[in-house]
Image 1 (tube, rainbow, N blue to C red):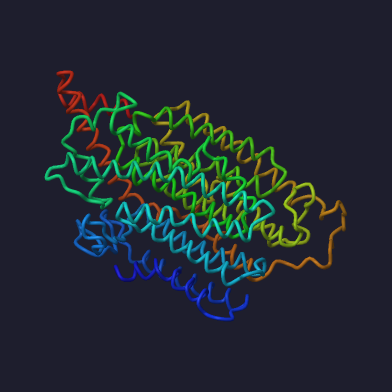
Image 2 (cartoon, rainbow, N blue to C red):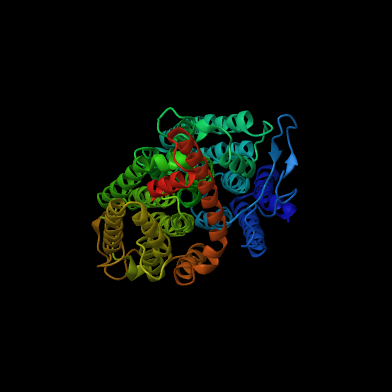
Length: 550
């Protein structure tokens, strides 16, 4: 199975190389190769998902012993390893990447006419980087994939984007690269601290080994978080800098709207559907798992950023006239929910955050696809110029409504399954924070229903202010098979997760529980330090820290 996982990761790269190296490919041949590659990759992702054992909390499909070291030696000294594996947190994001890879190819089927082989090669290369990141078990490998994903998306936006594509691509690249360098410093600091103070002074770059080792580090200063200059807090902030930009959390979101608006449709789908999840996934894997005491100590700071982003994103979305920009700002709001749930540092919040990452990828990917379909036909995204689309595109209107209601967390659809646990977990920590976040949900329903009212319902309105009754422009093509194929699986999953969420939670729950055990071990270490310094029993110190966490 380790070979199967490696093949799944590298298959998109093989497809990309074929597109670049095969001579004389036209648009039709290029998109068929891309679609075939992405479909086989999705099939392999589903095979791995079917073989995943929910009861196992250690990484699965990894080469090597069950408790490590994983993978194959890469550099030797230091022992950086090419280690791939999946657990309950990464498996669904891995599968989501495979699904949206197919969606992106289908969404580009007719809209990409220039340099098609190069375009699809960049899309497949981006899929390779995303799959590699979610499967990486080595911090160096993780960071390589983390930064590598910037390169293909930079070219996708810069070469096939809108009028301001060059500014958008450069802004996106420089902003996220700068944050990534700070994250690199944080990762190096984690490795050095573990080597310096672990028994035996072990130098390791293994993510599972670092997580275990840092949770029981015999260094008192590691457990002190009463100062901004304490080691764990400083490392948390370095890691947080890059991941918060990638999420993006308010006020680090300024690169996102321009990148979304200028990106081609498939670029927006993969950016919102998967690339933003690199930040939230990194926060879980590093900040929450390796520096949990700093996360706990800085909860008021994190909660304030999340709530501000939830409300700001919703209010700004309400003010938009451009459909794509509205959906872009809705991502700022929804990603705030995801980080808020994981910051609660309990099972319920982590389960809700992980499933909501998948949910957001499905609903927002579908919304961007719907906007792209309309843009391909009318060459405008202004809501004032398009209306009553249900008259002309009833099937598209169905998908638009379905994705919007899922995004608005309507009970019975996927958004509710994620946001309800997040709010429940937040309420257990801070009722006032929960109340403020709930306001963001209400505003979210408002701007999404307003979007539907303007674009889907009412009399048919087409660009240039002409009302053509129920027939409209005769030269506007109907929704195509490739567009139905792109949206159909997303709509099916939006419904399935909302009605039958347990198969998803069954795979997430053990990994989330294991993560909370790591948090508890660090709290016990902090209690020992507190007991030594204040001369109080260790049991009382543990109880005190647990109350503070709640």
